[in-house]
Image (cartoon, rainbow, N blue to C red; front, top):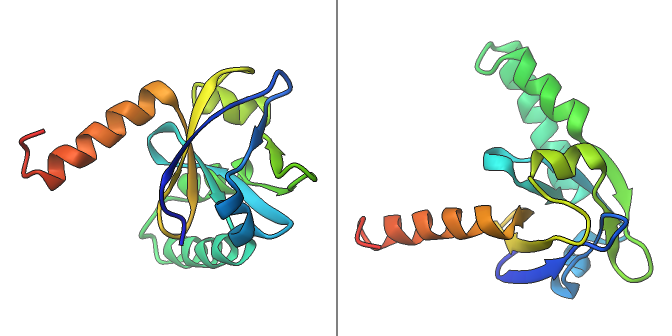
Length: 138
């Protein structure tokens, strides 16, 4: 399970060192794909392939649009972790997630995947989630 929050910084080439606890769950490679609310999802291969199968089923049954399926398929990239446990976030993903080289990022667990957030967006998402847990009293 991907749990916890880790502060990181992109290097000038857009590389991100994933937390060691997450690397163990990912193995040598993983998928990067645009996530909801402007994060980047980091998914183990089997979890991504399972999600893709479910998306294709939903698109065939008209439960989601083909455009949504296409957007996710077009954004996905199978990447290999380097010896330091880094992955490179390509420019399109960085733009989508509002990240720039050398920017501070948050890598957070979301049970079946990790999420990469700009520090500013993460603060907003985390506050909203805590507010819901507190019954709207955050």
